[in-house]
Image: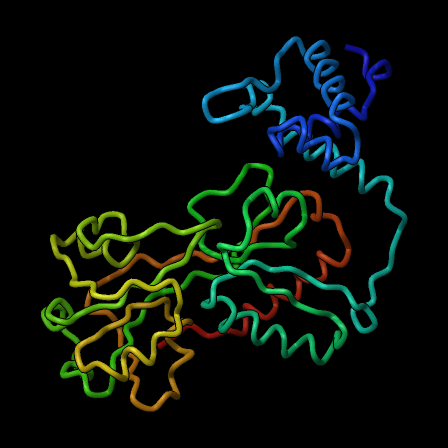
Length: 315
């Protein structure tokens, strides 16, 4: 196949079709008519000798070849965009750019709050728009509509770039009237009631069931390995749990250490180490290849990386 004889606009059409999985939505996204997009799909099918998208019970679905091609097409378009962009200078001190970051309140309080303090000093007109992990999707991130996600991820699309921010151990938060605040043994831990807190990955969360401890994450997996199980009476997707602890003498919240340390100066809240080992979690920032070479984005990634090194996680 001679690339000189190929209309490279077909890569743009292919990329949009695979993202939208709909001829009409892809046409609307690119601002062309539906017949024009249907014609583009026909040309792609002729060129590749492959149907590209096929109709199934769940809608239009990419073929196996299309799935293999998708990250390659995204990378090719990203590099083409980079090659065609004018050389730009980015001056953080005068920029008024808005960066959209998807993160849980754990990351907001431990990382983005000190980042904002830094930006106030060196980039006073830059704005951060912080979204929750339920406010967007991997597609939004891949298109560059969201600058980055910072979280713990079970998986990421192959096309994404990523960088480790930190590894975080765990700590327990208890109210100052908890009977085991000064000596939290495994027995006392298991006799207590617990707050389960987590919001990882991207997308809308699902309901939890305390009966299925193997699906509840790191803390409960560690207990399960010992043949133990805790009594969870509150499930939350937010790390701001101090009010629950202050109102109860028996509740324990087991959180990433950096999230727990946010409450170190809060009257009525005590931080202690868990009475059993828990595998640390790794927090990463992830972003699209579309933004990988963007000079402003590279600057933000560097600032986040530098701030992360200053956030202490030792109890």
